[in-house]
Length: 193
Image (cartoon, rainbow, N blue to C red; front, side, top):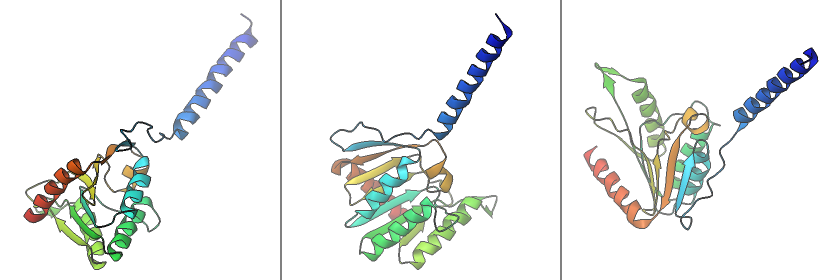
């Protein structure tokens, strides 16, 4: 094989690898086309924000949320937009209740607790009800129940990386019986906080 053939083949592999790597870097997972009469919607990665924002924006009577982490860094990121959607829902007479995790480690408040309390205090100042779990329990849930009809469950915390960069998997379920099951779960935790 002539030297220019080897160089051409090597360059072709290099170029193909570069193009594939660039494609993978820019790859965004599309919304899944699977649905059972649009009642079950799988959510991965950054698709969570649009679906959750839309569901919150269309709430009529209640939004109940349990989160391990809820924090934002500036007023324009996706987490702040979810926060603002909750405030707007509350202003439109939708009941909004949130349970956040709090923890300490050897009598020192964790960074997670500090961020959750910062968020909780801000939301309380806007009239939203916020409670924290017991220091004896880790509340690792990531759950949203809307109007006792829709439930969103999965791995997505409400932090910038979880909603924009991380590999995350959740699901939106539109089913009254399932939503009521999780509504009861929320209500029991709310009473115990």
